[in-house]
Length: 276
Image 1: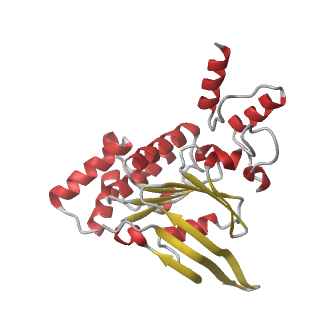
Image 2: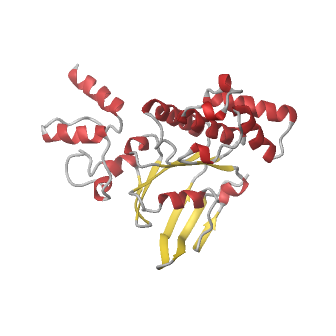
Image 3: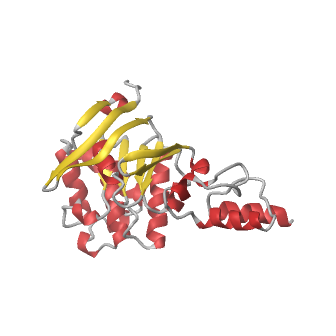
């Protein structure tokens, strides 16, 4: 088994426009390890969707080098912002069946994988439902079911929650977390900073270049107390999650928490301990 990392070296992507060459990604160095959850953030136009498409193997690079490593033998899938752009069957079963037939599966193995995928995303009761009648969240879950049925080892989510309501977004994040726990590598592109909590690492882009790479907590907190200075998130003009803003407000009032929460649930748990 090939366990080498998936590595990029000085990767650039440029488009030809009527105004000349437009550089979208500018000499990106990147490493993706097997089973890792990598979050990718940045303002609109930063290049994150382009990076996601390159990572999924859907877009060629203009310069640089990519060493596929473990990805060379892996099945890679992508979940798009608009699920309707990647669902082609008229029913849930038909869409998944088509996905599996494309990779050469038939008979008992096709049926087994179809059942496993539907159960994993909670759509088994909608197996024969028309895709057109599904909610936005259910369509995204169906797109993920296709990834599971294909036994993808790397799934790239390109702002997959941006068109969903809060409950559907939570279910999608939960499903992605379960996949990650099972060993699937995740590249999670988002503009919602709250969605970074489960990531192993975060990369922030600005004008096609990496401006931050590292720990999620350090991305949000300027220092160990979370009170002094400006975080990388703020420097890039991205909105802080509610929990981090609340910590800063508490710090301004002289209340320091023992740890640095990333989510509202973590913040509430620490406050409850302090109030006992």
